[in-house]
Length: 434
Ligand SMILES: Nc1ncnc2c1ncn2[C@@H]1O[C@H](COP(=O)(O)OP(=O)(O)OP(=O)(O)O)[C@@H](O)[C@H]1O
Figure 1 (tube, protein in one colour):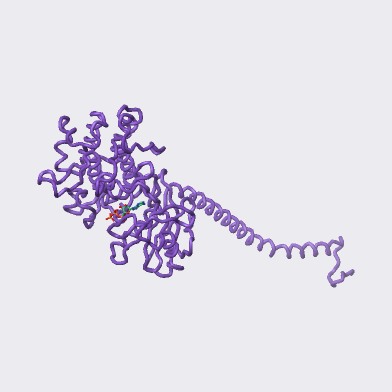
Figure 2 (tube, rainbow, N blue to C red; figure 1 turned 30 degrees about the vertical axis):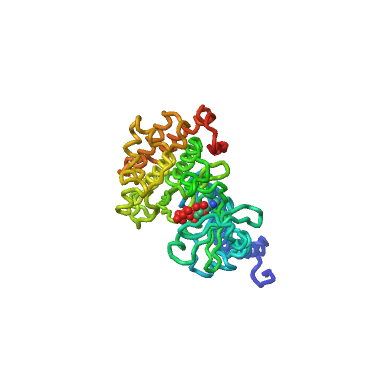
C-alpha cells in the first residue's frame, strides 16, 4: 500500500493531500472570520461615534456663532443688540484677579470676545489716562464715586468712574455694571469700554459723552447753559423711551433700570441721549409673575408710588420714572422743589390735573420753549406723560407704546415750520439714529 509522506494511506484519486490542505486552510480561516465579526462592528461603532462627535461639534460651533448675535448665556436676547461672551465675574476669588485685573488680565489685555471687546485695564493705565486723576479732569461726582475725563492709550476719550473704596453697595454696583453692560450694547445705552479691578481699586471706563447730563441742561446749577429747544427735548424723550424699551421688552429676561432720572441721561455731541448708571438695575430672572420684591432704592421724586410704598418692582416702575423725566422736559421743573408752595412742590401732583386739560396744558410748559411746538404735539406729549405717571401701574403704557407715539412727532420735526422757526439755542443735527 502506497503511503504519503505522513504515513497515511494514499487516496486512490491522489486527492487526499489537497483535501488535507483545504482542510488546513479552512481550519486557519475560522478564527480570523470570528475576529473580523468582532472587530468590524467595533470599527463601525467607533467610526459612527466619531462622525456623531464631529456633527455635534459642528452644530455647537454653528450655534455659538448664532448665539453671539442673538443671546448670551441665555440671559439676553435681542437682535438689535450685540453681546460678547463674558464670564460672570467673581471679584472675591483672588485667583481670577491676576496681574491686577479680572479675567487674569494684564496691561491692555482683552477679554475673549467675538462681537464686542470690553477691555481690562490696569490701575496704572487709567492713572496715566486721567493724568493721575487730576482735579482738572473731574467730570462729576456720584453716589458711588468720582468720574474723570481721560484719554486712553489709543487716543480714545473716555469717562473713568472711580468707585469709593468703602461700602458693599458700591461693590455691588460695580459688579452689576460690568456684568450687565459688557453684554448690553445699544445705541441708546452709554457704552462700557472697559474696567479695572486692580486689588482694592474698582474703576469703570465709559464712552465719553461730551454734552454732560440732561440734568445739567434742564436744571443748570447757575443758569449758564442755553435751554434745550422743543425738538431736542422730543428727540431726547424718544431716545430714552427706546433705551427703556430695549431693556424691558427686547431683553430676556428683562432688565429694570431702577434709577432712571435726568442725571443718568447723558448727551452726545449731537445732543442725542443715552442712558447710564446700571448700578441699581434688576435683572428680571428673579421675577415672580413679572414682579420683584426688593429693597426700595432709587431717587426721591422719580420713584413709582407702589415701589416706594411696598418695594414691588416691575418694569412699570421705570415707566413712572420716565413719565417724571418727560414732565421735566415739558415744564423745566425739578421732580421735588421744596422752594415752591405746598401744592406745587411735587411735580407729578402739580402737573397731573393740568396735563389732560386742553386749556391748561399750555400754562405748564417751560417758558423757555414757549411757541416752539404745535398745540397738537404738546397735547400728545402731555397725554403720554399723564399715562406714564398713573398711580395704578397697570394703567401705565409699555415703553413700546411710548416709542410708537413719539416716533411720528419726531419725524414731523424736520418738516415742521416750528423746527426751522425756532432754531435758537441748540438745534442739534438729527443723527442717523432717529
Ligand atoms: N460717560 C460720561 N461722559 C461724560 N460725563 C460723564 C459720564 N458719566 C458720568 N459723567 C459725569 O459724571 C457725573 C457723575 O456721574 P455718576 O454716574 O457717577 O453719578 P450720577 O448719576 O450723577 O449720580 P448717582 O450716582 O447718585 O446716580 C455725571 O453727572 C456727569 O456729569
